[in-house]
Image 1 (tube, rainbow, N blue to C red):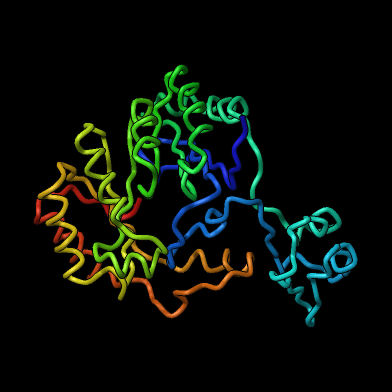
Image 2 (image 1 turned 60 degrees about the vertical axis):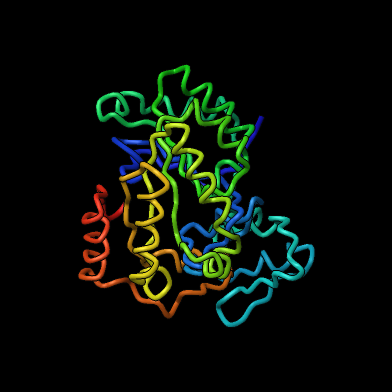
Length: 300
């Protein structure tokens, strides 16, 4: 069994307790306007362009089987309407200006990589976190990997958007030590506008996990002008207090560091005009959760 991942980061300290190895799976049912891992949205292997590496040889233009590439000054542009992602450009590029995002891994390969850092996990209380994208889009692989990793005594965390089938979530829960669960927007219409899906299933699954006694940390990506209103914060607090027992939330301030990824993938970046939140506003919102009885951490 294989899965498609786009990154694997050892020594991570932002995706659960202790020092962790974080595995980023490709494919996500959401398409959030602020997504900081746009390479994780598509389930397929993708091409990325690093213009700073290009020496202008033109080999990629000749190699492209669909003539999707064209040169404009010192830049190479790709016509996404005709590109078939053949990766011929990657094969001929002498400077890795063209790169492929995504690779296949087996359960055994992933487990072997994780176990290399076992001593760090044991000393720090860390382990493995599966993130993305949405790991549960490759649920069969994740189930097999979690079972193998649990047999080795690893602490396992799952970072999920919650937009998954109830059975998929319940099947992985017995093998999962910690769930990192995203909450974004309480208004269903706005959630649809900015993520591409309704929030109904996400709320339903959150209540399901609460009833099942899951250990869970909420994650709230704080996006100025989109979900930082007093109304959204108050609605979120009321919902969590009335319908769940979860009282730990990480407030994740918006930043622009992902914009370069969109440019390399030649994808539109919808929030280029939005600036990161002011520290005073971030602290005010964190304070609102604290006042309501939540344990709050700013940042992952």
